[in-house]
Amino acid sequence: MEDFTELAFGLAPRQIADIVGCSLSTARRYHHSRTAPDHVLRLLAIHRNGHLPTTCPTWRGWRVQGSHLIDPMGLEYAADDVTGLWVYRQLADEYRRILSHPIQYALEL
Image (cartoon, rainbow, N blue to C red):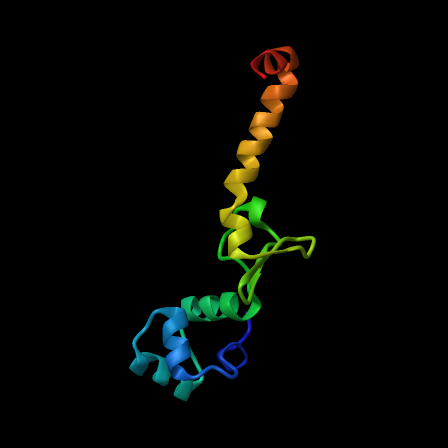
C-alpha cells in the first residue's frame, strides 16, 4: 500500500477530514506526522485512485473519476446516465414482451 505522504499529496487537512470522516484535529495530526492508520490509508487510496471500495467481482475494474463512473472498458457514465437506466430497462422489457407474443401485440393496436 502507498504511504500517507503519497496518498495525501496536495490535500489540505480539511479535505483529508472530509474524505476519511475524522475530525479536523485528527486530520491535522495525520498531516503533521505523515502517518495514519491502515483504514485511513485505504480510504485515501480509494479517493486518490478512484477504485470502488468493494471486493464484489462484478464491480472489478470499475472506478470513479471526477463526477463519472468508469467501466472496465473505459466508458464513462454520468449520474444522469445511471439514474435513467430504469427507462431503458422498462423499454427492453416491453420489447421482449412484444417479441414473445407478436400477434397479441398486433391485436392490441
